Amino acid sequence: MRVFVAGATGVLGRRLVARLAGHGHDVIGLSRRPENDAVIRSAGGEPRRGDLFNVDSLVSAAQGSEVLVRAATSIPSGIRFRRRDWIPNDRIRTQGTKALLEACAQVGARAYIQEGIVWIATPRDGSLFDEDTSPDPQLWFGTAAEAEQIARAAGEKNGFATSTVRFGTFYCADAAQTRYMGERLVRGKLPIVGPGDNFWSCTHVDDAADAMTAVIESQASGIFHAVDNQPVSLAEFFIAFADALGAPAPKHVPRWLARLALGPETLDFLTLSTRTSSAKLRRELGWVPRYPTVREGFRQVVEAWRADGFIPGRGAGG
Ligand SMILES: NC(=O)c1ccc[n+]([C@@H]2O[C@H](COP(=O)([O-])OP(=O)(O)OC[C@H]3O[C@@H](n4cnc5c(N)ncnc54)[C@H](OP(=O)(O)O)[C@@H]3O)[C@@H](O)[C@H]2O)c1
Image (cartoon, helix red, strand yellow):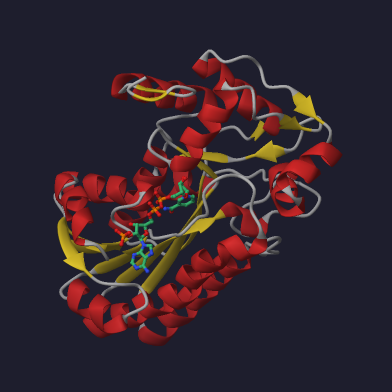
């Protein structure tokens, strides 16, 4: 089948293009920049030029596609987030989603699938939740919930299937955020906030691409959580990463100090408890994560860095 991927050159998109092409699908990858065409070709896709804020460019790039996918984001780098840093990402999740759905209707595709985040349904008391839990977005998560509503409404109006695959804390060797965390851990500059006893549900990006591929191929519709088998505490997350790196165990800092250093929004994000599971995705589509917990996932990340000559704390080739 022909699948059109917007965001084909990002950490998720390039894996998705490779998986789909590897399964024999005809994959069209969108990029705004000619210099990214080689990334799409090397993953096995065919590059096309276009922009999520220009419907006509999407319609012409996606002609003949049965499924349209939004893997594009614009997540701010670093760790000290302010609300305004998320505005470009908000635009992608709202206007970009609308434009891609309009293209979906115009090219007569049978399905639309997008990335999402599990945080939008995190209960305020930190209890376990799943796809049936009503969204209650906090912090900057509102537009991820909007993207789901926009997709559902467009699917109902135009008669195509829509799905959102919600991910947890993303990590992989080539993600800027993961490299940043690795660097800071090696330098002893990524402390655990407070006791670090809040939970995170995590997703290795290889597993994220497999989950999206399973949804695309199944013709399923709805919401799916794609996270590994075991939510870990914030402390366990950083200790497991430090262990894999051979770095010293991170120290704890009090909340007030973290608030001064990182700002209130990052602090709230780091200390949210997000505990969910991918039981639905396993049950309905047979998806199983390659990296059952962050311990296996971080070992793979560090092995990939060593193979590439990237040594956190010393930079590329150091
Ligand atoms: N991608 C995700 O789903 C996702 C989800 C959660 C967290 N993260 C984290 O965010 C950080 C950056 O991720 P990343 O590497 O995927 O980001 P990135 O390198 O910034 O890639 C974003 C992708 O979105 C596309 N894109 C952005 N704006 C677009 C627009 N207006 N029209 C069309 N395409 C557009 C880019 O295409 P061009 O080739 O045109 O630049 C690119 O393919 C990483 O640390 C990652 O872990 C990513």
